[in-house]
Image (cartoon, rainbow, N blue to C red; front, side):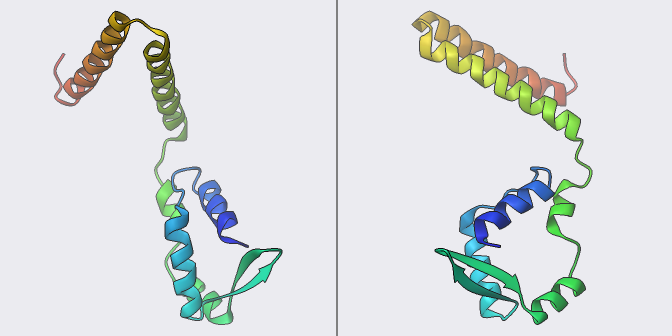
Length: 127
């Protein structure tokens, strides 16, 4: 498996809760290879990685997979609703910003700022 496939696999296994960046994956792969836990070979212009025997033993002894920890306790339905609401809000704001008049943009900015304040008031248990 090459590095990009690993990034995709981790994102999938964590249900999207954790998607490591190439800047963290590739140095980690190099470190694991330096420690003899993985081996690499080039195939079709890609560097493919696999566990060595020492790597398999270390994986069996180690803690649970980090993607399991990253997704534990996540309410996926609520997370989906939150994402949809946030993206919908930003899409509407972006549309006003791109096509609206100066006055409409100012009103939209006021709505966003008011919403932010109201969200913090929820945490403060104030109406």
